[in-house]
Length: 316
Ligand code: NAD
Ligand code: MLT
Image 1 (cartoon, rainbow, N blue to C red):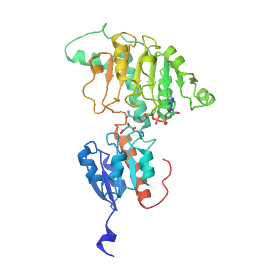
Image 2 (image 1 turned 60 degrees about the vertical axis):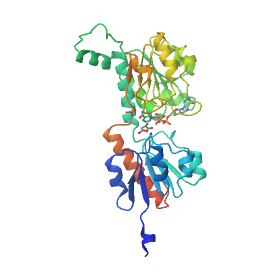
Image 3 (image 1 turned 90 degrees about the horizontal axis):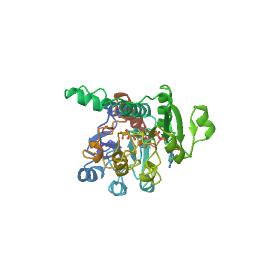
Image 4 (image 1 turned 60 degrees about the horizontal axis):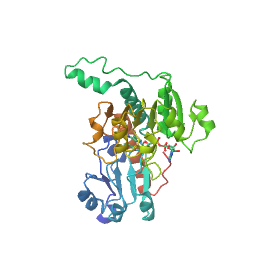
């Protein structure tokens, strides 16, 4: 066999992934690395690879796909595919795979953590105490028991959050037009229209994909319908809760607090929302546990192996 025919397929790793990913790929591939968020580096690097592995910071859009002459697979080590132009990939004959269940428990746990943090001011009180301030009355919070939690998007993560927060004694309502009321009722969740959810909820947690329909869904109009005591968590995608509208609502006392993991532009190191003591922020950590990263890495590595071998890739 000539050297040309024995050349290994090239897999480009464009973001930091668990070391288990490379182990699961095995020895049959040439592994290359690039910083996928660096566009000027990504476009030449993608030109002659067979597969690319990404998280959420790499945009595999139509331009990137057009630059990728040999590309066969885009593998997203996580859930959201909003950073991949799936129609452009499909048109170019490029398969797109993700790991839809790899980080759902991890993401649900972070959403619950943000929710509890907003109820009890844990981050602000921690910062104050470490700065030498014993501010007990300033950080009086609210109980979760008997309060109503509105879950916007009752999919995989929304259900896990609902189950976990039920254990705190919360009443769960949800808005999700694609879920049967009977299925929600089995889980003890009452489905309702979005407007009603906005009116009755003491806490709102968003678990939607980012699509043209969901961008700005929790915007100025919605934020005029909520209770002034409401706390809102977004650990789904930036922009579903409109950041400007949220900042105005917080400023005007129409919303009591927020927990945010995601931002309309990432990385986000400067936002008017960071100025509020009652806003708890994390830098897109929803999937960032050892367990979730290992599961995501192994899952997409297996899919890449199958896809490049010309085999069927089962739904994860
Ligand atoms: P999922 O597909 O299981 O659930 C999404 C739900 O939203 C579905 O039930 C669907 O019916 C509903 N939905 C879709 N469009 C809707 C609309 N217009 N109005 C109301 N409901 C609508 O997804 P999932 O695994 O639960 O993930 C949810 C989101 O969380 C995704 O955006 C994903 O990218 C994000 N996520 C973020 C992190 C993080 O690191 N912060 C980690 C994992 C997932
Ligand atoms: C996801 O959609 O899986 C998360 O945003 C996590 C990630 O991007 O790594």
